[in-house]
Image 1 (cartoon, helix red, strand yellow):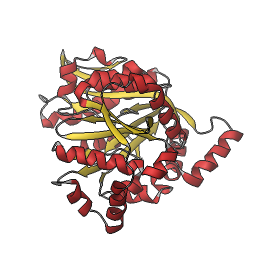
Image 2 (image 1 turned 90 degrees about the horizontal axis):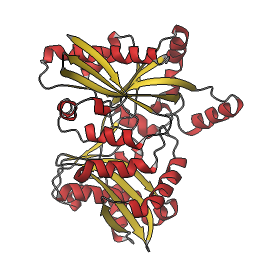
Image 3 (image 1 turned 90 degrees about the vertical axis):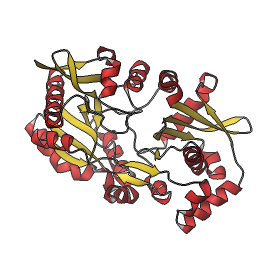
Length: 374
């Protein structure tokens, strides 16, 4: 007998069965458990599951929160919405129930390996139906599927059949690492970029330290993180100290924090997930003063590329920000989609009208170029 459930803890789902739905994924059961245990302010976790009797067929993480419609806006548009907020607090805020995760790279919905291909669409349909039912039970009208890969036709069919609207989301940046050396990678780039990066390598360098235990430097890490967050227009979640320590503890050898030091002062850090197939850049935060002098972002980028080359990791997944630099650094981009529908017909019509205004590619030419690069 087919049944669907929405759990408040991932511990309610067997670890091996969950991971069977996402073979080889770094953001697996342990990752979501670490995030759950860390807690993220204003976010509440849900875990959707479809069973045939006791046998798991498919799962998806989900969450609910208060969402600001101007989250992905930047530049002049963002400054305009901030002025409106001061005049009318809460004007852009809606309660949101979303399939996906605010801290994962994509919407990770998965189907168990034993499910035949012909039945997988039905599993996705049931996951979305459970999400709508769960949102209704929580009194939340706006349902979304966050960062669904455009090439995932099962999700696209499921969402469109359910009447959800679609708009571009932030694309994923990936660098295929097929180079025998760092010099060969530099040789693949445009002339001006290659010249800039080689100048960076010849200049003064920070001390680089790879760590899996950061308790002694956690206050400095949080100071860098908060300062970087304040400079960012694209702000969805705010992570606490427990997020960084839990990720490193729970994932063990599959997580690392790279520290950048100048004169015994921590000036940048980079939290990453990694295995034999992929390195995922989760968070890079830095001291703006030293960034100007040392080009810290380029330094960290080159350190990560070199690590991938030396360890034969074929893909460097570089996150969803800083698209201008990532275009110059040779990334390719995989488009993601945001699907949404509000239960209230009037609000749903309003969202249809304003989705073009809040589309993330409208205010960032580099982001628009990344979205179109597929």
